[in-house]
Image 1 (tube, rainbow, N blue to C red):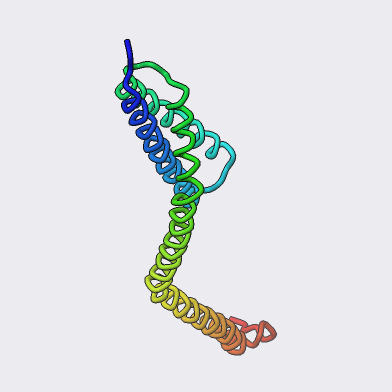
Image 2 (cartoon, rainbow, N blue to C red):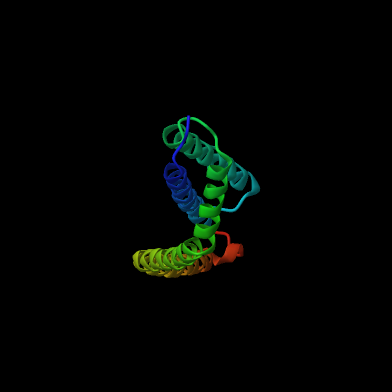
Length: 161
């Protein structure tokens, strides 16, 4: 069974595009890494999930476009497509993502600060009020004891009754 060279070239071209698509999927995982904490276990499971996703994408591609026959040049083409995407568009996308996410984080912090400002001011005012009340009550209690003690003669005069 002879296979036309044009079909093989088209298959190689598709493998380049699939490789670039896998690079775009990898960018999604890298952007998630910017947002989420960078714990080693999280990174491990993200990498595992990416590898499984890439394997499924390649399997579907090879099954549909290559009639289920794994061809070396298709794997090489996908690798080249991934590398070209990663070294060109991927770098731009990642850098823009960092800038956008940093901007969003700053905007969220600013909005949170604006929302929290009245509550913080109210809490400070209440604190001052409670301190004022506490100080005055304490002084009145002490003053009351002094006045009551003076009326009773500070315990020195005992009434004989």
